[in-house]
Length: 457
Image 1 (cartoon, rainbow, N blue to C red):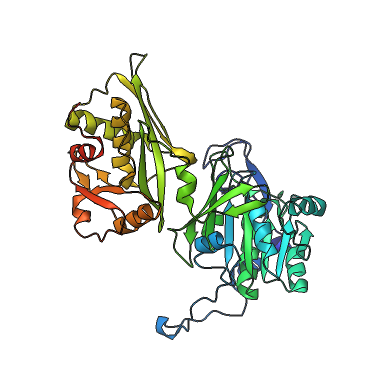
Image 2: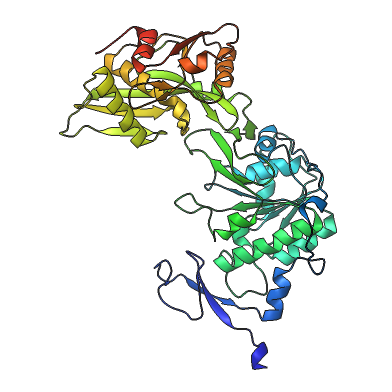
């Protein structure tokens, strides 16, 4: 009897490390009061839990494996299909995370409304609350199947009974299994519930979407193994003060991670943004000093975005350097290049850089636009109207070529820009579209001469 007795282990809610006995402090990460009890499984149960259904596994040659292109299902939401790689893959497990109130549940509800065999499971809201939320949509999905439950076994039984092809669980942190003693949301429950759902997705061929909470650092709550276990991880990004939302694939086994989907939160729910560049450019009636338009790439999608700079005399002994949506260390490098190569006196001035619309830019091709906006604010002279800038800035003041140059320029021409300042090496191979003039430059000083006629300040 003693040999078959199940032993308890203690798992850290912070890092997922296990311990045979309880302690006040986790020995792995040093966090206090994070160890929770988890009833262990005997050896036979462990083997049964780890082996996939279907019996003993067999070793096969790679060339003998039959495969076909995944038969994807369209969600009816083009921006979501783009991020998923073309649609939903049957048998896939997708994790979508984001800040509270950013629109995760609303987007999942809108997706389910377009699918005839979807089952929406809520562990946080009552059915009445979901009904009120659905009433805000233009066409409330009155035939959508709903379930308010937190027991994973019961949820899978309901999915079998309804013949669901798509299952949405909101959220994974509220789910639990009967054979575990720990509370819902603990590391053990999140890990084991996700493992059970993963096996169900593969065995039954249904697509499962897991909505996940995030920590105060923006990471998906729970063990890191959760993100390793799923097929796709989607991150919902956006600020509460802005209406737009960006869905980005951090991991995708069935598609590219270089795609983003852009939505706008409105009274009708999550609305697709077909042309994000118009959203981020805003109203540009007259050019103003300290602003420039850059052509950045978000995955395979070109975006035209306005960057702003403010250069002012410092009121402190040490000048301030502030950025919003741009890397602060990259800004320091650009300021050093402008001082060294153009003779600008920025050591006694505060410099602030902002990316309009709340977007964050990591593309090095926006360096030239940032530099031009800083010089424009320094001189209080606006850039030439209708100009878009593309180029990476080197330490010697050279403008280096970037990828997808032709795609960026075509987007600028489509939006009515008349001039593009680009690296000369890329301009030689570029087939410029009609209506836009391409200026090839190889030094930052040449770029500023093209824009508002200047050499050294």
